[in-house]
Image (cartoon, rainbow, N blue to C red):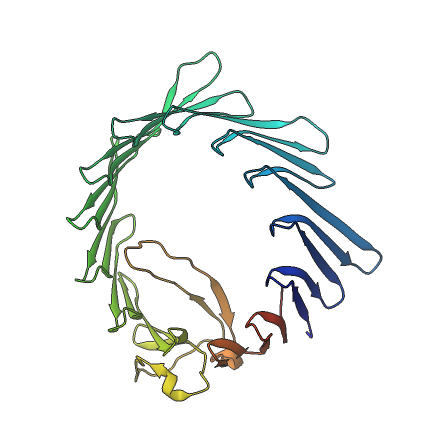
Length: 354
C-alpha cells in the first residue's frame, strides 16, 4: 500500500524519531546520559491532528521516579539500595492506586500491599528460597496462595497452589527437567509431560499424556540448529523441516501433514551455497486455498513455544526473499533498506501494517 517508514538516529546510534508516510511522527528526547525524557507523537487523521506526549524523570540512581502524560501519572519511590518501595498511579486525576513494598534484612521482598489494602506476605526457607505466599485481607485469616519445595540442587520440586492443584517436577543429575505432573486431590491425574535430551543437552523428545496425548521429537544438525520436528497425535502426524544459511538465519520452513506437503515458507539467500542442512521431501503437494500455520521457535531445555497464525492463499504458497550481508533486503512484497551502520531505516511494500 506504499507505506513508508523512516528512522533517524543521533551520533550515539540511538533512535531519535520515526516517521510513517507523513501521517504519524514520533520524536524521542534524551538527556545527557541517553535516558528517554520525552516522547512526542503526532497522528494526522482525515479531520485533525492528534498529539500525545509522555514525559519521564529519574532518580540519581537512574530509576524512573515519575512518568506522566495528559491522562495518567506514575510516581515511584526507591530506597538507598534501589529497591522499589512505593508506586502510585493516578488516572484522570481520580483516586490513586498505590502499591507498597517491604523487604527483610537480606533484601528479599517481605510483603506487597495492594490498592484495596490487602497484603501479600512472602516466606523463605533457611536457604533463602521462596517457600510460600499468603494473602492477608482485612478482618480475615491469611490464605495460602502457593507453597514451594526444592530438591538438593535448588530446583523447584513441587508447587501447591491455592486451589489444591499440585505441580511436581523431576530433574536429572544435570539439572535438566525430565518430568512434570499436575494432580488434584479430588480428581485423577491431570497431565504428565516427560522430556528427553541428547548428550549436548538438546531437547530431543517431549511426551504428553492426560488432557492431550501427543509426542514431539526434535532433530538437530551438527551445529545444534533444529532441522526437523515430528508431532504425533491420535489424529494427525505433522513433520516440520527447517533449513539455515551459513550465518545461522532460517531460510526455509516446510510442514508435512499426514504425508502431504501442507505449507512451505522460503527465504532465498543471495548465494545458493549459503543454504545448508537442506531437508528434501518427495511428498506430493496438496495445498488448500487457505492454510492456518504455526511457527514455533524452539530452544534447548525449553518446553514452551510462541505460536503465530497466518493465512496463505494459492498465490502465496511460497514466500521468497533475499538477504545481503546477513540483512534481510526483500521478503514477499516488502523491501528493506539500511544505513551505513546496518540499521534499518525504511520498509516499503504492499500491505505493510505497522
